[in-house]
Image (tube, rainbow, N blue to C red; front, side, top):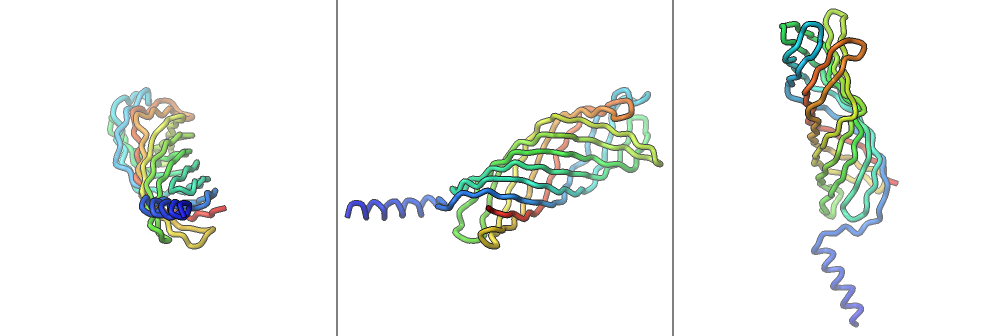
Length: 215
């Protein structure tokens, strides 16, 4: 009788705490999204005779990604992934020279942690945070077929996100997410051309969706 009471008490505490009693699993997730960034200012160094502020106007961008993760079965998950992003740009240098075309792009790896809220349904909201590591961040300046390219790597940033997952079945799920990431104080060096563009920020806001396979 005492053992039975103990089982009942444990069950009630579990329901009260909202803990998900589920088996842990691995997963693969493919994502696509659109991103926005506010206009940026950088500082040009040794770019010919031009030194000073560079004003960078940015348009919307597109981002695909792929990640591999592990759900611990207790509402927590962790994942490692990759993402590419490119936003169209127009750059004006301190002397008034305008590069009407170009792009501000990145190739980034990340490590995220997630907490999924237990709704006891197919819909599970979640929040998360993580670290980003840049394999490359670069900006291209283009005018009349002439291109200047500046690149950097090895920077570390952070990201925070929130979204909702919908379980199609035990193996497949969909998710929608909004995410903010940030690298600050980036220095980019000329790639095949002279000069630098320094003190740049890279802080995209992304709205995306993903398709996840659990195994």
